[in-house]
Image (tube, rainbow, N blue to C red):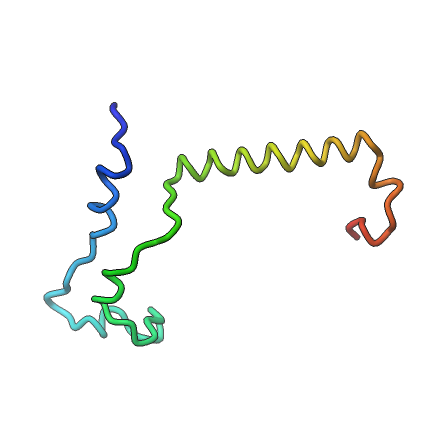
Length: 92
């Protein structure tokens, strides 16, 4: 299965809002549940997320972050930093 480039599918997937026909919009999305805070649906349509990530990218980024964090932790353990550190640095 061929993978599409983000620019080929992103605009299509972010424009999936629909207009209700059988119920009023404020009944469908009551203020106390949706928390729209007076922002109109048209304004939401114009919103574009500044940081766009899909699940495979998220997993890859998290893997890189974990790898970096665990390598620092392992280096500190080899150095016995935790044993020599002030007690304020250790978790209870």
